[in-house]
Length: 231
Image (cartoon, rainbow, N blue to C red):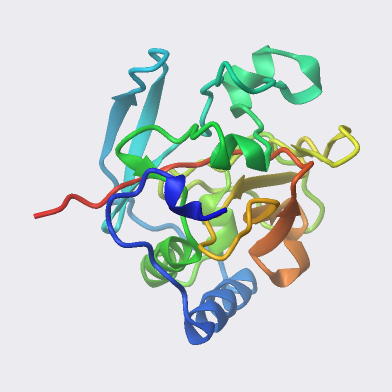
């Protein structure tokens, strides 16, 4: 099953092996960097999802426009599962989705798409170049909610505000609230049974790799990025 059903009018990016290596390298180097204060150059607006009236903050980071919140859309054809069965967690953290919600329910709203690894590389490049040597992971994390060990606290320098919303595993167990934040990543080569996901943890990046593989039974979050405007 192709990933083309994800609403994305522009040609899909396909990260090269060199780009993937550069992407991971930048994050690894940033983890050990000294954190310094930088001036935020973001423009915030909102998007109202016409399907359910939910309003999302948008944040401009470099040339990209991201939702500054996880998606909360509840498709009628899919079983909605709030973290720990608490509906208040949907408003706070967003809706955790299985892979089927992306391939079958098309939950991503029109005008946005699921970020691919190239989108993430561009995000990391911009933050690394504009964070004055700061910790990239810390710059993406929300300032509150993380349960830290010896890692730098969340700084939310650019308004991305990645929350430690945890996930639901294949055994339908909710895990790692306060310890990890993740969202699904598009992959042209996926057969519909698994997808990559981007993850940050309270103890640093997952296995020093920001993009990992997720299985069909897992539920993680969706962080949408706005489609590029075509001339």
